[in-house]
Structures are given as structure tokens and as C-alpha cells.
Amino acid sequence: QVQLVESGGGLVQAGGSLRLSCAASGGTFSSYAMGWFRQAPGKEREFVAAISWGGGSTNYANSVKGRFTISRDNAKNMVYLQMDSLKPEDTAVYYCAADQVYLGRNYPRGMDYWGKGTLVTVSS
Image (cartoon, rainbow, N blue to C red; front, side):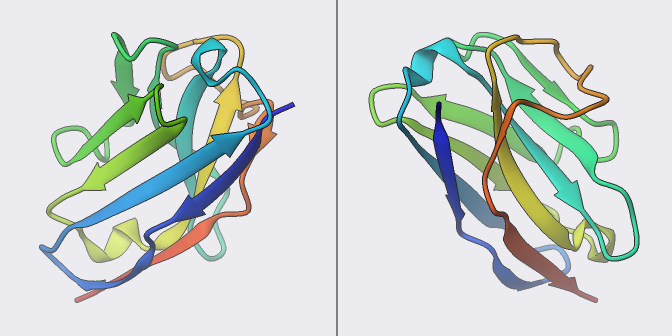
């Protein structure tokens, strides 16, 4: 079973950038597809981005496509989310997640394993 710990959240002005990191332990990292989800206050959790086991395939929610980039380093057991051109509507708790199946953006019930989340606040 894999454990996930996010870091890198914080307060940023609109138009700014942040990079989230997720450290994985307790499993064979390269056997997991990885993803980022977010939950804004009063809203349901939503898919943000996912990356396949080797990093060769990525998928994004339409709302972040072109602004966010997911990547992974299997040698370091890390996954990242580079967030550029941030908007106030990107404000949310961001969760790192892992699943043994890569489904692109089709995770209606989320993934199998979750971190505790990191808060991103974008001020206008």
C-alpha cells in the first residue's frame, strides 16, 4: 500500500505560479498511475490531472489544460503539479492520488490511495 504526502501549497496572487510535490512511499511507485484532484470550499472533489506509470501519457481537466503540467520522477518516487497562470477559481485543497490502473481522465470515483491534501489559495 502506498502512502502519499503533498507539499508546496500556499497563497499566491492571480497570474502567479506554484509547484506542488507529492512524495510516495510504501509501494512500487512505478507501478502506479498518479493523479491530482482538488476540492474547493462547498464543492465536490474534481479531477485535475493524471499521469501514466512511466510518464508517457498525461491527461488534464479542461479547466486547467494549458496552465498546469503534471510530471513524475520514478527514481525519486515523486510526482509534481506545476501550476501557472493561476486564477482565483483554482483555490482549493489539492490531493495527490495513486491508482494501479491508468484511465486518462476517467476517475469518477477517484483513485485508490490518497494524500491528506495541501491548500492552494489564489488571491485576486
